[in-house]
Image 1: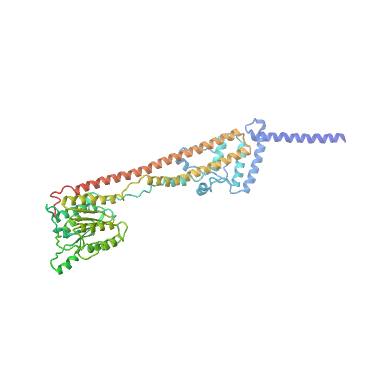
Image 2: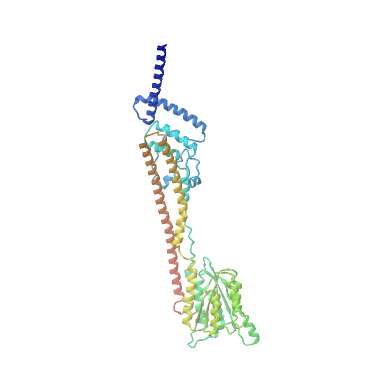
Length: 494
């Protein structure tokens, strides 16, 4: 009896010791996969066991696909290589929106975590090489969305307002490329009776100045010439006729210098000043569009009209309208009235007494006002507009950054699994983590360089626009100088 008990105890002890030895061999194989050949048999058995377990788990999770072979992962050195990066086998269906909006959330779901544990356990049974482990993590979890979001950022184009710069070549005065609005010139023909004591302020002088002015503004405006007060007033009947003498001598349209001069040749007046009727006519032909009106007047209303009412009606049709007035040798009362009309018209008023003053006002004041208005539409992008485009581009660029961060979060979680499961020594875990950080920084550097290049493109486009505007300004100035040069035989056409 005693002998039987002793034999049983010995057998139990032997089985216990054998189990302990086998357990130690398995653990050693997991932690030291490059052990001596005397552990090969245990490694093979353990590997077969793991394969069987993995097969069973994948049968339960058919949606998870993993790579069976380890491939070499090339270092990403350019934006193009980022775009061509293959999708990780566990994240093929991950959308750009998810990666952009969920970078701060737990990056992996439970099925993906299970698959990573299986893959890393299987790999670390074969090797403890940090590069191969890093490669495996990348193959499983790298983003599938770089190409789409990078393409979107590469296709970004600045949206600067294109300046309006009409042709300023004298050869194509008839070819108006585009119109910003309309320009109406109102001429009080009663001024033909005016003659300064020095004999300078004549109707011919006025015609020359108007033609030169129309030549400039006609570059990017339709032009109309309305003449009033050009019918004689020698009787009561003539008075009624003179107060209705308002005529559009040059119909609203593209400026033609010869036709414009022709419309002025027949004007010889000695009538009244139906200014309100002329303003009403201007309002009728201008519709609801942006209009600048230029009035050359001999004085106040003489036909019982209400110029103030007509100015208010004209201005009420469009907030971008303006009325500029020149008074020709007017008295103080007439000057005050004309000045009031210019204020209501959000414009300027000048009083002139001779040819030199008229030329200076039309050529320097009126034209400067016009050019300033034109240049409001030709301004190159300023610092704030450029900054707005920077920010708009950064909206696309930040999506790439978020995908990079989300991708790294997945990598980091895989490294955490590697550490918690103790598949390899902590020193190996640290090496894998360093490789992940290196890739992360490298991608951020690539994106930073991309941003620098794109901002340079934005700056260059803004500079190109500025250069075009400056060139246009110079051409405008040259044409202005030519049109308002000292009168010579070429200009004396009337």
